[in-house]
Image 1 (cartoon, rainbow, N blue to C red):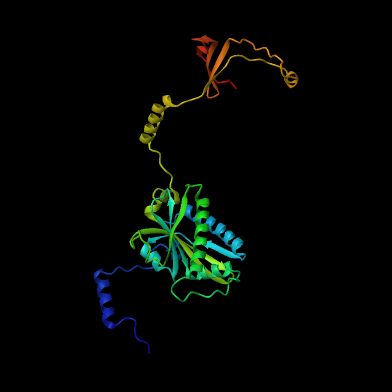
Image 2 (cartoon, rainbow, N blue to C red):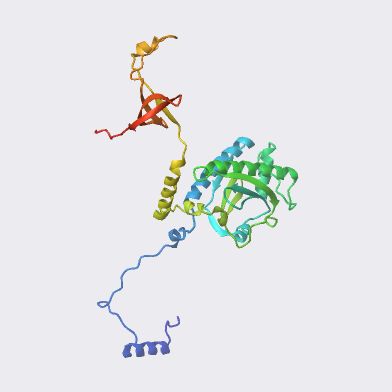
Length: 328
């Protein structure tokens, strides 16, 4: 025999509540409630803040170019994909590295500060194996907790190539001069970034045949500066007051700008056949040799008369050339 859903005391309490009106009862003909649509958490969970869509596009281009470079240099098939951009603290980002990493510190002028390239130990092993002609699938994983001079050399070569490609990919947004500053073993030796500093990171998954590994590109948010709104896809609002200041500054400097001035003192019109038949010593008659046109930067601006002043050839200006729009 199954146990009752409600005890006798609970039933009595419900009856008392209904009798007193404390508990509202709805009949089939009374108040009805609207249908509720089930809420799916998965689609909404994919909406993330600080996703930096424009940076994600650059990262995808970077992944394609780095994969092409590695496949060409290492003479083996390398596939690289860019994972979604993340915005975390530096300490949190370092905690996501699953193994020993070689960390390259680099500058990217005119941006201030330093960025990082974290290359996992397995990635270095695969690069070394492929670099020295191996298949890339049977590399020996690093168990010593450090890297050999040869491994560090290959790491530096990869970092230099990666930075050169970063410059190319980012050129439409900003011209960078990326230089490798140092390469450290692990994140503990990296200076200038605190565990609580926010950083923008992208993990790039690398595939050597059947073996998967990765490297991570990190930029401190403070280093990105004015590029953060660009990566977020925001449009810069124009400042009317700032525009007026620029207009005033440009107008004030215009009178001091040097411009090349020259004059035309005559002109002639000849058939093309006559020009083609000209020989050394032939004479070309110039119409109105005393009339002159003064040009500033190849633009006609003044009428004038050609003559001599103070013993030197000169142009006496007679008036401005008026330019009127042509009726179409």
